[in-house]
Image (cartoon, rainbow, N blue to C red; front, side, top):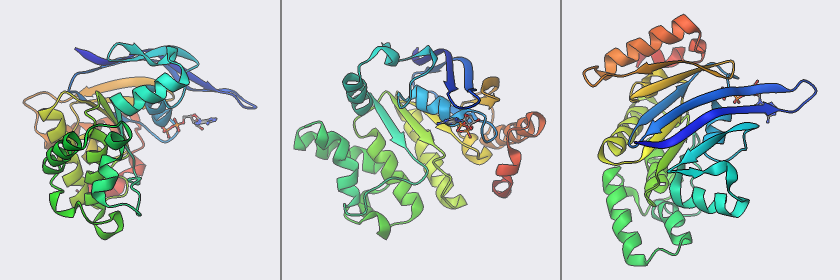
Length: 259
Ligand code: ADP
């Protein structure tokens, strides 16, 4: 069952020379699917993610999440929908250093006036899921990058969103931490019904996905599927081969090829 549907999604930026950053993107994300978006710099990945997440408005086309058309919502309703139904993970973690990891994680549910007992219960569940129980009373600057990103994932899922959007979540991590973070994403995906859409340059991170959309010049150029029987290693090789063939910005990812 589709949890997100994008129909003929297009975005034109005004300027001295108006550019189509995205043209006619049509695809679905199934319940519990882990979808990657790859492509060279400037190909439209961030534009697409921002449209899917309701951060920006398309020039034409629609985005529906759980049957709700984001394009028709008023600003207030969209803000509420994003807070309740979507989760976000960023390259630079976006945790507040003045707060403990525990406080950072519970902010979204505390803002929504969820009862304290329920907050505690959900905190226990997500911190166990992400293996961060022992760092809850520390502050972000006292823990590793990988632990910060796993804490950010906990914050993104504590309110049980329908969709999580991640923008280069391994961009600031060493290879061991990147592995831990991607394992956390794929465990979350296999254990729940949350859909995940992740933009990445990194073929290693992308190899954890089930499907990858390759974007080129603002268009969905092709897709890669990982079959149930495919190992992550062989999907990684397929991704590298495809980026080589179609020019997916492989020069951006050369440092990661040794992982
Ligand atoms: P990517 O994330 O793949 O690097 P982007 O979505 O950031 O690509 O950009 C796609 C195209 O849209 C590029 O040509 C970029 O210069 C242009 N673009 C992105 N944001 C803006 C903006 N706010 N105003 C004008 N042009 C933009």
